[in-house]
Length: 342
Ligand code: FES
Ligand SMILES: [Fe+2]
Image 1 (cartoon, protein in one colour):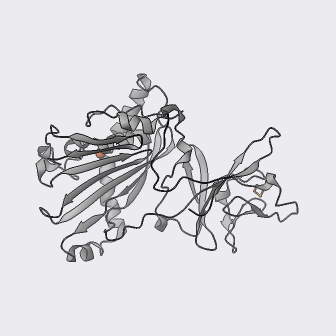
Image 2 (tube, protein in one colour; image 1 turned 120 degrees about the horizontal axis):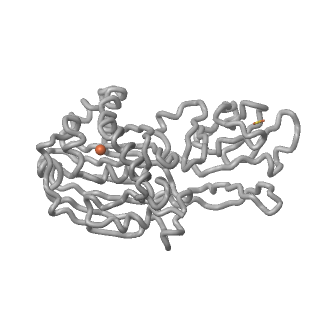
Image 3 (cartoon, protein in one colour; image 1 turned 90 degrees about the vertical axis):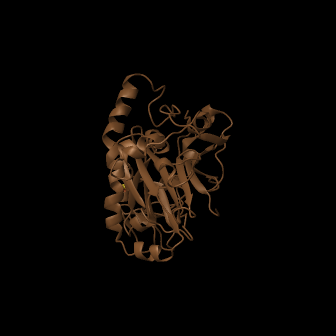
């Protein structure tokens, strides 16, 4: 990362100032010295597939903070708090000006990706700290070199990011909840050989040697990496002629709401298959893939309501890994450290 993010902070005079603070490296492990010091806002979160961000400003809410993304004149993705420093109008209601800055819809102030105001059409000093918008580090990442990006999808869900992560790690529910979608009730197997192989403050890795579908696909490896990534990997090149990763990013919008960003890349032994799969239009794969989320969505929302009402959450969902009960893995300790909020 070459650029730094500009963070607006309040001073004793209550005048916004811009300070430089480098964002964490994109692939750096989560550093947590104490659970209570975990800073949710000091990590990278995927927001959207780049193919879904057009020429207009793209609004999103991350950790209860409304933000806006856009592509500047150089084609780089930029991100600001979705609030104009002039009169607090959402900047996402504005437009991308011909010079690549973001122009507010109300009085036309324009902003660069680092938060600097470049124009106040009615006069005034754009260099004033009061004219500065809050900026966040933003970049496009994760090409899939060599893998076929089949099944990329996203959806905003009416339950917490922690509930989503727990659900996708819990392989035991798949044959029942997703019967006739991606599995069958008769495929339910034993987890007797399941083991956590590695734990750290960043998360854990585990291996299920017998794997899903009663061993038909071979072993399944699972990785949880805080604060938002769960990844299942199946290497079935020898038995079935393919490898597959299911990566689910649970992006916290607010307590009780999250965005699922799912990637399911494949690698096939037979090179004809990717060519054929590449012909399937995106909307077709999208419609089919979303059935999986439909299977869970109602009862996970209702389960979450009950858990909170029953006082089983020590804090509201979205702030702490309250739902982590280790259904499948022998212990979720490594995860809870990475998830705990302040
Ligand atoms: S509110 Fe944005 S320019 Fe006035
Ligand atoms: Fe599920």
